[in-house]
Length: 549
Image (tube, rainbow, N blue to C red; front, side, top):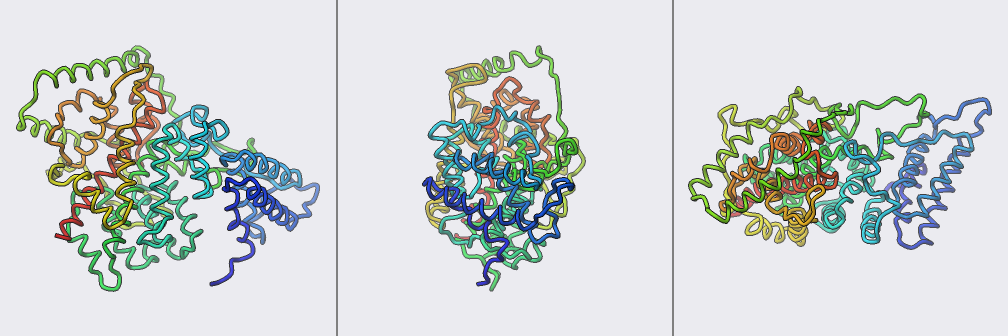
């Protein structure tokens, strides 16, 4: 194996910073300090009259900028206080030597949620601290997604354990394949944030940089996955056993069943995580493109092309909704829940009526428009990782098309999908099941300022509405409840975030549930993400089951 170029050496030695042992962290910090100072010395002497400036790209130490950006990220995001403090000091020392240091762009992990409302790394309880330390040890970063999910530590713990298993533990697929599949999946929704993260991870585990020039540069085996990626992301009900057969019987480029299950779980994980990323307005990581700048504040301009958004909707919307319009929103919703419960207790609709209500809701969901904006044109940076960019979610009923109904009693996660995943990719079925249950059952028995509220009816309506958009029907559920509990602005947000997440805007986020806490809206986004993932998985696993029988 080729030795690593000397300039890249220090980047591979940051692992010790994630150790729970203070002396190991101390040794790693000292190593980083020496490497940084060596590089700084290499670009000196800087003329006293010259303004401080970043290392130029043509210099042999051009990756000093990357290292300084990473130091900045660690000084803000590392869960260990000694590391944060040491790197604040080191950055200052570098600046004192006349080298310009970077500063963060933007205001925290989310464009939608004020930074002061999101968990600060330095002010978390013991349990959350432990979760953050585990996340940091696994990936060498505490990313913005984790910080926003930190509103719900129980869920975050389950999410990170699952993601760690999928990306890093023993499994059918090699590490670089896993990250490349993550790139392919995130690119379907033009999610630059996730694409950038996994491009870095792909290279770090030894992935071939040529694959990143475009899908045509990747192996045939991965190119064959493109059709499955496309259909799963946008119209999963169209998957058939023939699609599965094509992948499993491609001669020297064929997939094994275990590999295919691993790939399907990764694709669905990253499609739904792209929904969460856009739905929460996640901003670029501090050390990535768009997350920092070397320009002094006076020269810096607000960056409208927010890389995490992917569609230019970075303008801040200062919508002043009338208080009279907003006040009472929560009470009205609680009263509807109470009335529906009373109706449930009094009478039960017939099976025929229940079926009619489902079909009506499914048809209506097709007519909810996601956005008035023109079609998003993906940038070349993202679109090279997938084929057929024009293929997306369409409003089928407008063209006379119909989403067929999948009845949960015929194929469900609990009775069918779970066991298939566990059989072919051990432990993953269990991890996914715990994550689905955690999102679905998570409750603090509150609604905005009200306490001791049973929110199960509302959570079920949100989950079932998403599955209804995918044609999935629960025979025992009265779909008439959805129209009572979910208003039009909320339905627009749900449909956009689930079907065309790249079109989600700050205005949409602000226009639903205006009296609710940000933590409650993040909880909604967890429900949307998990319901979407399960819906995609159901169709993929059903196609695999049909192939096998």
